[in-house]
Image (cartoon, rainbow, N blue to C red; front, side, top):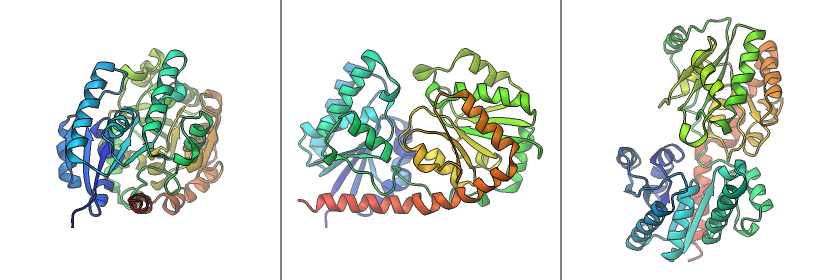
Length: 386
């Protein structure tokens, strides 16, 4: 029996591989899944790992009208050739181009997952352009899936599309989390010891961790400033930063970059394929982001038994319950961030209480298989309309 064909599109292969790890191969058992993303050697890795066919179409993350038109044409040609019943896009640029191409190619079911909106921090003409593109994306889609309740409310508030098109799958998240893989028990104690030795971390140190892109809208300027103040309060505090700088998109303040490179208590590592060891040697996860969809890194941190300090923005405030598995603070507020960090530095009992509930909450609500099963049901439901 011929399987129904579904095409999944992201702007860059890192998203196809990271945001949808395991999900593509799971769905490929039920449908014929094809992945499309920008050309990169990683596309071949995804093809081998997930067992799906892939296409490379050059897509940029910036506004590039000529390149975008070329990408739109390439996507249209692929869709006309493959004739899928479903096109499902992720990330803003792939969403806009993929939904337009699917609309013009008359694909019956055009689905777009919203996992964060850069426009939330944009202003002026750029905000107008991004709003317009988002509305076009949703207009072309037959179904829009915000991956958090907060994002759904924002989309309704901004009148991007009718409420009838919107649905949050399960309890949120685009892919859930593999809580067996993300478990502190799996991280060898010798490896933890080696990392602690490498970074000169001892038992007296309290390690605050951030994993993600080193950019302004992740709250890194505020985090570094708050940490430097905390270090003056207690020289045993450490800040572990893991992730790449992205200067072309959202550069940090020069002073922040200087402190990351020179402060005696700050440890920085570039992109890591396996972030679990870094969670394992940390005591508190800090995530002062300005905007999110449904941040996977908070799911990972919680599953790794870490209490989290997170901002009161959509996604974050659905995963973290203030005083239950972490602390919630206002975004862009250095003083509130410092107070929360000082609180968990000083009060070991409070930290222990939050740690006790962190992992179980993630297991109960966001286990990966649950999210996959809920999306599978959604595919089956919409395809039953044929």
